[in-house]
Length: 287
View (cartoon, rainbow, N blue to C red):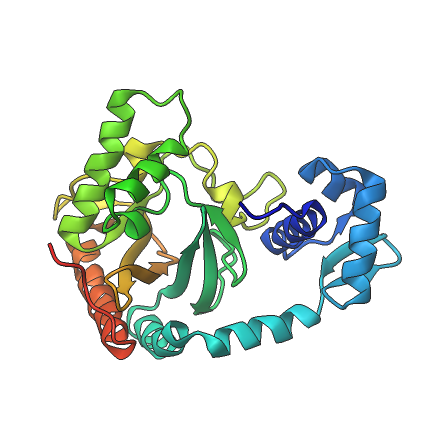
């Protein structure tokens, strides 16, 4: 087993946290509180990241935000990603045709990382930007897990912890089977979920998933004539070994849509994902 590097882990946690709050600059005290880090240790990390250009410091507020060096890192990473190269034209075409934003993301360890986005963030709704991360934990991430081997499914389910009952686990298994059968995932907005934060700003990804109820979020079936509040529709791009390389999502629905409309949009999204799969010489796994 590789040795842990706590200082590196803390620096990564700081960058991820600031990426999740990219519209705000946070003070040392706020970051220390949110990440439960010692202030002296955090001060050294912030200084090192700021000196390298990965963070910028506002001397008036004594707060920190993401720095310009990350732009170069992000551009270099995107340039080296064949799947994103092939996906971006398809994503832009979907945005132009559907009037919806499109996002590409990948599952990395137990997180979902946003890689690219087309469209313009709206003043209302969830604020999604490249570099942001979500936990790959039920009910999140079905499109990444639905075609996975059993051991990966078991790991995904295990992230619920020991409190998860048999009924809950079975519901998640059925959700995966439904996604695999449809060829796409769909996430719905629950009736009690806020569209904005208490301060009136757009929600971060992390804030948007708090309090998710699986029954509301991941429907097993969709009725053509029923109206739904869609959060996203996602389709997989498969790699050379039949693994989910990345997933494409359409987001930013301005209002409720019918199950028939969800299917129509999903068909266009799946066709785009299939073209990207072909472009990177991937293949769908055998049924």
